[in-house]
Structure formats: C-alpha cells, structure tokens
Length: 543
Image 1 (cartoon, helix red, strand yellow):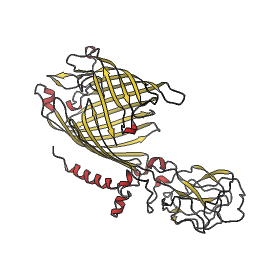
Image 2: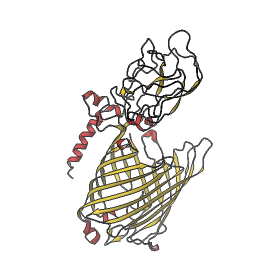
Image 3: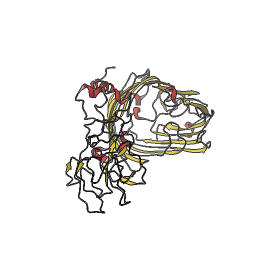
Image 4: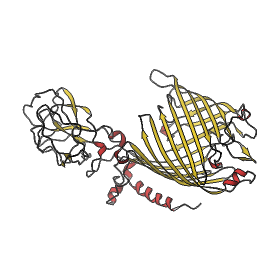
C-alpha cells in the first residue's frame, strides 16, 4: 500500500513536534517572556482572597487600612483549566501612592483577609526598591500591556470593561509598579505569575483483542498547541516553546496492525475567533482486512461544536472520504459486487450529546446520550439516524468511596436509508457490539457474505462489582441482546440473546490505560448462519 503525500507531511510535522521535548517530559515549562495576551485572559471580574492593603517590605510602621472596602482588580480563572496553567500565585507589588515597593519574604505580618479582584497581570520587570521576590527563580513572568489607568473619584470602582483590550477607547500603554497611581488607598496591584503544567504527552504501546487482532500504537497529543507559533530558532524547538501556547489541540495517531491500520492527524481550536464555538479538523487513512473483502478509507472531517451547558453540547460536521473495496472472497453477493472499487462519500452530520458520567472507562454513575442525524450525498444518497443511551447507577460503595457496585444499561438504535452502501451498513458481533458471537458474526448474510443491514437495535445489561479490596480486579455479569436486520423491521427469529460473565483488571501503574477485559458469553438465541464465539477479550498497554 502506497502512502500518500499527506502522510509524509504529517510525519515531518510530527518529527518537529517530537523534538519539542518539553511538551511531553521533563519539568513543566514556563510561559515565554514574549508571549502576548489572549483575549480569553480578560474576562469579567472574579473574586479572589487577598489581604488589603498589601504588606510593604520596608522597615518601620506599616500603614493601617482606612477602609474595609474590598480592593478591586481583574483576572480570569477559566484559562488555567483550559490551557493547563497551574493556579496563579498572587503577590502584592504596590499600594496607591507607593511607586516602587514590592512584596518580600519578610512581609509576614498577619492582617485580616478581605476580598479582592485582580485588575491586571504582571509586567515583566522584577520588583524594585530592594524588595525580594517570593517566586521560583525558574518561573518567568509574562509580558502584558495594560489599559490606561482611569482617574476615579473616591469610593467609585472601575467598570467591568476595564482590563478588556477590545473595549472601545481602551488605549493600551505600559503600566507597572512604577506607573502613575490614581486609585483610592484601598486599591493595589498584584503581580501574577503562572507556571505552565505539562500539557503534552507521547504514548507508545499496543493492544490485542478478539475484534481487531494485534495493533501497535504511537500517539503525540498536545493540549496547548499554537498552529501559528513557528520556531524562530532551533532552541525554541528543543525547549518546547515552538507551536505551543494558544490552548489549541493537536493529535497524531499511528496505529499499524495485522488486520487494522489507522493513521490520523487532528487539530482543535476550542474558541474559534474567541467565541464559544469550537472547530475540529482531521485527516485519516484507515485500512481493514475483513473476512469477505478488504477496505481502505482516505479522507477528512471538519466539524463545529457549541457547548450549551457543562454536560450538553451540539455539533455539525462534514466527513469526506474515498472508500475502496477490493479482493472480494466470493462474487456471490450483488450488494458487495455493486460497491467494489472506489466510491466518493460525503456525510453531513448533526448531533446532540449529553455526558454526565464520572469516568470515561469505568463509570459508576451518570448517563451518556447521543442523538445523531446524518445525510450521505455524492455518489451515494441516503439518510441515517442514530440514538445511543448508556445509564449507570451506583448501587453500593464503602464509606471511603471504594468498592463500588454498579448496574448499567446501554442501547443503540439505528436507521439507515435504502440507498446505504454495504460499507456503511450496520453489523453486530464481537467484543464491542454483541459478545458470544465472532466479529460481525451476528449480521445478515447474502450469498455467504456478511452484508449487514439498514436497522440495528443492540442492548446490554451489566452488573459490575469488585473482587479485590483495592478494586484492581472486578467481576461483571451481563446479558447482550438485540438484532441487525436487512430492512427496518424486527424479525424475532433473528433476535439474539447472550448472557455471560467476565473480569476487568485495572493496572495503571503497569501502563495499562484501559482495563484488561476477559468475557465469556453463551448465546441462548441466535439466527441461522450466525458464528458463535464464547470467549472475547481486550488487552492493551501504553507507556
């Protein structure tokens, strides 16, 4: 199989990102001193706890507060969650009327705490006037420009627009501890220093399961990517500052295998044009050797998303790909013969998702709901609707929160139009769809070929509980049931039911990302031609 030029470009980009070793290992990297402010750092006032007025490092009596009114500043606390910044450390630098005083380690006299709102970030200059800094010497302060200092009458506080660079009429000029001060006495500036946490990782591992065979896995994942921060020197590549700092997402996946191969590169902008809309762009190459034919997909996807609430989001996307079917095992299926060769497929997709689960791999409480409508066009034309619901209920836990017993139920309901090509049909059978059957072994047949169908209704009911006191090994009792039909109808003669039991082994310290899974299922109801398989499993390791 010849790799397209796209993969070569992806390989070059990944090599450069890989050289940025700071994004995946070593101590946390600091913000570049020349980094410019993002508008996402300037939000509505946020109340934080800070002493008012700040303590001055100079010897002698300290000024006593004349008012207990809170001091007002501006800051943003959402940015550290989105980009991975550690919680900022706030250091008072000057009071009104003090031009160069700064906080020092000697300033330890206790005064009552009051509420303060951070007005502006810190300038790059170090404290002057003999004061000592409380900062880690490796932490570099950020460079920012500040709005014009307003003149306020006594007792009046600035509006919420102060500190918003995009606010009309806000002239940006240098502002620091030595700048002019016109605030009342109970106002002060705070120097804000942040240390960036580790936002990237490189994973090297593999997996072996009963559905996909043996695969390797190499992943580069960066959560603080900057598409337009090109390196200006080789040092910026080696110290991890190139292509980093904008809070964007970059992911590269290389997954070769004996049955399945997948290569993917994706980019995510969580705040498109500083809005609440997210943008995701990805390109992929997928190849799979099925029992009845070989399939390869080359394409990409563009999607926009919007979060309605912390748990509910909507999205709209377009998937564009070229699908090639080759090497049919037999030529006895008209549906397969019709789809051989290359097909250009375009799928517009609209979805609503709600996710309140407490854990992505082993949830014990919450619910996942996905409603999706898709429309295929191009060389093929067909509609599609999918509903997926998974509900988890905590039945029992120890007083310390461990030893959880969970009951879960999941259902997948799907409808597809009569013009659906064979490679977009629904299939069932295997670890991820219906245990007790071989991979795609519980799907409709035509001429001895598993052609799938236009309707699916797949369900699973599980009860999971711990066996060991440390929750490392858990047991599960389950029952999978449902059907896949050639047309939108339920033929009860084809309805499958497979109860069983299994085990989950969770070993994160050994590099096992997802739990090891071993299941035994025993079909008690099946359709003619189904291929049964009692044992199914999943094993994976990531370092």
